Length: 397
Ligand code: PLP
Image (cartoon, rainbow, N blue to C red; front, side, top):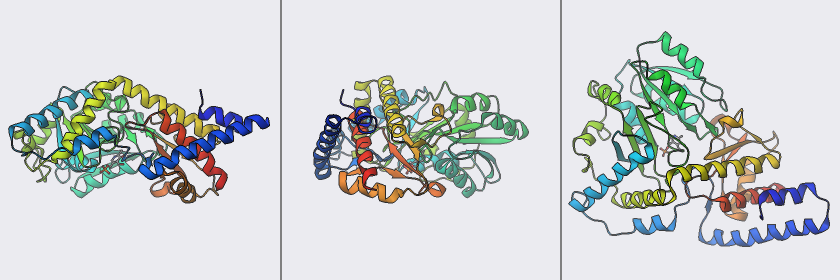
């Protein structure tokens, strides 16, 4: 096996000239191969948007058909039904036009009224976004914050829920893309199901890539988006709703208009406003690809890629950002950098020399971590290539 680990071992553990020469040849071959990528495509190893396969691009170039016609509405409805399999839910899943945040906003604007109590479990940028959205709708927001890099603390959630039996909505992010942490949704779901509150979970950067069980884990509203593990372009948001969630929505004075979910429920096959027809063609192709691979095999592939990324980065001397490997995401790996490390120069080398895009840290983590996405249709080829190029970029820094 010609692997990154082999290169690393040769490069760092061996003093033999022959082996050093082999490593150099291998590195040069990678640069040549990547020259092609640079001309044709960027190698997107950011945590979304991800590489869109040619199959999906081709499917999206089909001619537009009338969005109110039978052919489109049957196809649209069929994709929403197929999404239930990916969400692992018996409940309806709706496709909204907008990025993932549109579904986050729909989840809250439809369920909360001013002064309603909302508990936001925050341990990163995206879980913080839920708190911002809830505040913008006038909710009484309780923020239970864990240090970034740490998972949501389930015991504290239990305490807050018993202290505040009037909490109406609990929000959390399954895969906190900003920190590379995978949160214990199942444990929180087990707590929330015994209360009157509903649990809203953002799976935007993990659904269709990592194990997620909407119904088994008692998730009332699950939101996701197209441009991550579905390997679609940005522009579609997905949302599933349990009966408990609909009860809350039906008794809530909704502030929403474009994202008023009751309008979408009225006639599922016909979205209230013009749906993005081309993206729906793409969604059909993405779901075909998922079916061909098998959802569980897809979970396994992502897990394997995450292991390769973690081991590769650790071999290079980086420390993973999450506090323990059991909390590490299977779709994005976040690594801490030393104090004098210039993340933007490092990213620039990867981008300009190799055509590889990775992400830096967000908010307070800017300059302190970098993140490598390995989701969607990424394979070992892309992850090993990225690791080898990271190693080369480090030499240039
Ligand atoms: N939530 C998570 C976990 C994300 O990773 C992202 C995007 O990176 C979002 C929410 C926001 O999604 P969008 O940019 O599609 O609105």
